[in-house]
Length: 84
Image (cartoon, rainbow, N blue to C red; front, side, top):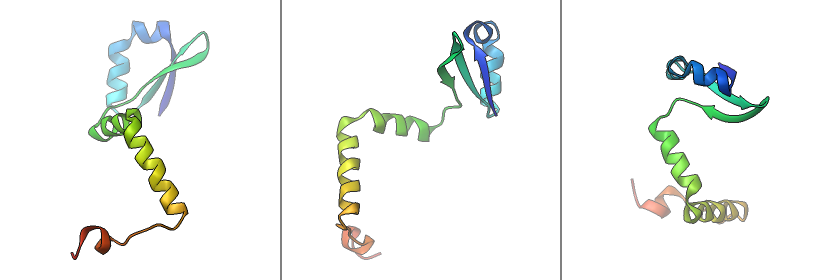
């Protein structure tokens, strides 16, 4: 479940907010009525995704791969990795 808290509320009950997030909730922190941050449960997949999104080199590779797919430049698993 997604919950919204203003910054002052979140600051006053921060340990409770963390407990809620650990149970699966998402908490959006607002400042002056506008979303400013989100607190979500962290896992290895999220950390990996964040690292990929921050890497200019990886994002270029993903972009090129998308272009290859659109252009029909595809390879089978066997072609790419050999017999399995």
